[in-house]
Length: 462
Image 1: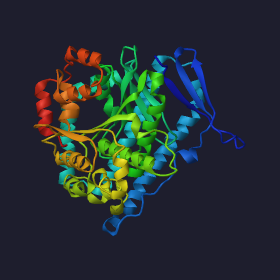
Image 2: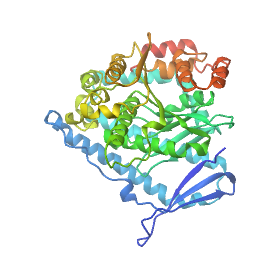
Image 3: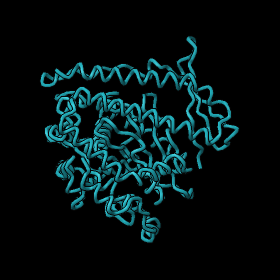
Image 4: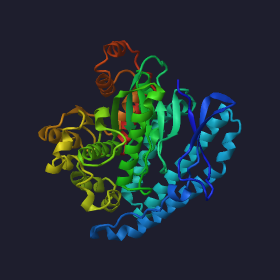
């Protein structure tokens, strides 16, 4: 079993070489742990202040709002990175497992405080009207009803030996990922590179912990990739981060027992959109001349999209009516002129992109028919479009399921749920021994009482 990696960064002197030096050292208190020490650390480069791109005239009025939000984000990043770097040398001293867990809890608490601050900052400029008040009240009730499940998942996330938290995959803020490893280490395991949702604003790698736990119980490694959210970055930054995370997995997962020839890319909600954009963009790069790539689309066995949206032109007004206002959404997507570039369904129909479509892996899209956050038509239309232009795609619809049923309520219900079994069957499709084990796998444990799940379904704001 590979050892956990703890990142340590030190400031280089002014005369230090620009070359990157990486040293691995063992911790006396925990010989199984490894410290990764990098001499390349430049706070000015790590936290660039990137203003939101110029807007179209239809939303110029929000420029001051976004600049203030970006300033808030960067100030927090500067404080966080400065504090982390000032105390980094302390990690060289002996550290007990309990201290390591405390440090990780502190890191997540800091990130949670940060994300909450961004949300309130956004709300202060959006205006807290009736729509937002009712949605936040519904969200509070929804979270309380699922709290028994959240507590159990959080305990697993922080205390399970099968979880490797916050492995650094790049130099940008939030370039970390979590690994969920099966208990058995015999043989190479299939891998799911998962990108979480969060409306492009509140995504976080820990949101995939329930999926990671349950897939790892079926002998599947799950890597949950974190990425910069708005206003830390816009959609280009999110796609860049996702690509770097996938590259890290393709090139390093064998060290953790993963099979580099069986990597599946998966995303949920906004994460499904980001993952699809990343995959299409990578295919376009590979058909270009002279473009260097650190991973290949051919390394991805299949793309699994859960409750995603793939044509932004069809979704912009829908999101506006549900509270993700047009001005903010266009800021995230870098203006109206960029909607074509970041709409995979539209992009694959471009005649110049046709050679890239032939490189794409099979695309399987999952969606609930009662999804009001992103209508099920989004997945159906994308699958139809891919097939029409020569791609391999199918959509799988689940009757009466909402945006969160497939990802939260059903997994917390325990037993066997249809979508989870479909995903596992796809991943294990070429492994008869694994399929035989899946057929006799014990039902999953219930995390939340049924009456609370039904109430959560009814009050869900998603």
